[in-house]
Length: 312
Image (tube, rainbow, N blue to C red):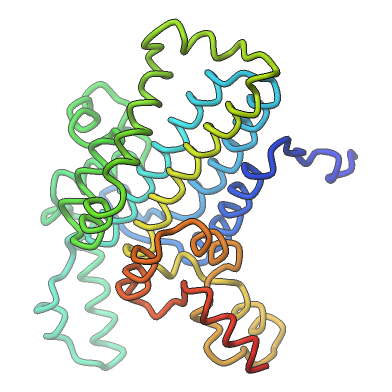
């Protein structure tokens, strides 16, 4: 059997590898905080599928850069961007599916028997789909792998592309709208136009970027990394205000698995690589907005961890 280490991809570009490591972390956290729901074909789970997939996409992007195939790399960056926006879209839809209302839940007592009846009724309501919106039903077709069927063409047209994901998130989450309107309008437009130009080959220059000469490679790498980081900035910011639990570090769970007492407050720690990235890259006003509006008590500001270390 081949040595596993020999099969591990070796990155050409450190910045791309660093981004890959962020999504390796997110693949663990999204696995341990999976979303479970129910539709007409039964239970389904949104877990770490997207994060695992984009890790492989980043490896291929890096290989394209190594081979000077920048036109191919940007086409894959479009896939990277679209997959991440799709994850945010699906996550947001699942978390807001129409089962029992808060008023209906309040009618049940806190006894185990009553709680079990409530859960059963909620699941039955979700499975029936009678309260679900068109977007919720379309999302389930994606989950059940039938979205590609001919009869679902209108669902694909109405809900499934990056611009539709963005529009849905902005219209259904005030925090996401604030972030886009105040920090990312220009970045989104810039990267969206660039990626469309490469995917649709809107000019011979986009073909010729698969034939980059060595003397322009440093600049090409710099431009590509900027595009990747802009997309990661947008993704992390939106995910932080939709579900900041997805950023949790492993310290708390690691302690429990080792039958040790977790360090006080460690359930609110964010993966160190994400803390470092966000504090180095993000506008301080954006970072403060995320910290003030993330909703679960997670600690995104590097200063918190600095103070923690000084107390040890």
